[in-house]
Image (cartoon, rainbow, N blue to C red; front, side, top):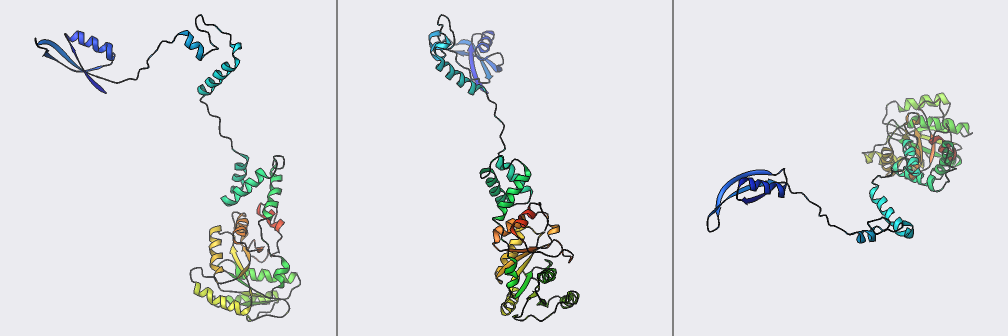
Length: 358
């Protein structure tokens, strides 16, 4: 609000002047009589409040000026055919269309974003989903990625480039394997399943155990030895035919001294190290276990367990890409009914995108 004072000979004249100058909505704050000048002439002082408004000054523009600005229009006696100046007319019309049309076109979802959303829903990490989506969008034509089945086939080829798998001959050529992992990761079950797998490939197998922390460990391994008719021996450097599989106590993520003790035993034994990871864990937890194990053990391979309860299979791809350690096999259950098998890159990639079962 703004306040202004007016002086007039009478109240009626002053109010009339205020209404003309400030408008009919002006608020009268007060009036008083006062004398002014040398002769002491009596006048009325009126105090008024008003809201200031920005008024646009209207200037008269003659027809000649308007014709120079808008040559396609007709003003007064100045008439000009629009066809004589097509370029000026089109330029002015386009300018007016752009300024007047305030509508914004809806944002288009790119093809890459659609692929990225789909891959994220499959469980791929944001980094992997973005990388694979860009390859699908720019390395392959729209015809090649028009159908979901075609996209799955392309994904299989792309995943194969990132997956690291241990060859079966490399595994069977090792004389001794020590299976390590955290509590509940399925180490003992993995040892027994590997024994069955090796025997199916014609290898002789002997069982051993370093696990002296669990009371039932020796009794459990003795039962498996009798059930499978495989010899149970004390862990020792092995040079005979076949493969020695060694069960171990649980890895301690926060107690490196216990892991160091086990590491010395495995080193004396000359064993290669296989790590079991619970497939139902988050990728960050898997990476934390691998980092802790690497401090004490030279890990040669990974075996993923409990994949039947894993919510997302894509964690296999992200794990293999991050740790650079080959995957030996996948266990879908702790039950011995589902035995292990050696993996190939293609069938593992198909397993990840749920186009095949192991």
